[in-house]
Length: 159
Length: 139
Image (tube, rainbow over all chains, first blue to last red; front, side, top):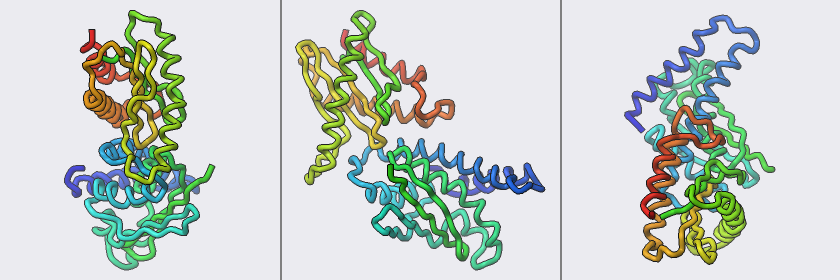
């Protein structure tokens, strides 16, 4: 992808714009903004999931796909690799990034901690979209304990 | 070269199918439909193979008297099926492979088009034009 700074700025503006629309949201207000961001990520993920693995061999199993997310997808979008990938071998994967690029500029430590989740919605959608294109239905949630590290939990939905 | 080109979605419904207008269209639709079983067989065999035969290109699916049917499957399990006139012996495996690669590239362009909804039928003119160019080279 293009220069990482461009994507970071665009993403910041997207979040700001969606939050500005509804300065005093009701109980469901913020949720819609999150859903919109997630939806955008989903569509981008679908396209990337089709485009990036063009030259690779076919994926044999789930783990191959998750590795692809950590390596190729992360490098394409954020210019770095995921720091760790853990699994319980029962369909739950935890992807950890110790310096998530979209949070790095914000702070380190606990300041702005409650603002962080809205900066992760797009990426959750991105992961879910890529997985769905590659034939894996999943639920993706993100959590932040201390900026700029964050964890994405991927739960595969078995049919 | 090709007499019929089809793109089949992950859930096995057609996203795009086009054949040369001079002949019975339905015949080709049947042919592509039949080939899906062979594609499925090849995909499941691929998962078991320990050796690295995990290519996207599936090779010749089956020959009939007049035609040869070739297949290709992307990582997102979208299938491309191409029917080729078997009288055209000049066509080698490598050329088929590169035709599929072209088709795949075009398909990714379609997917990246913001006006396309994933899962809909493909109506892009750019894609149409590319398929036409693959079919014309024959005649």
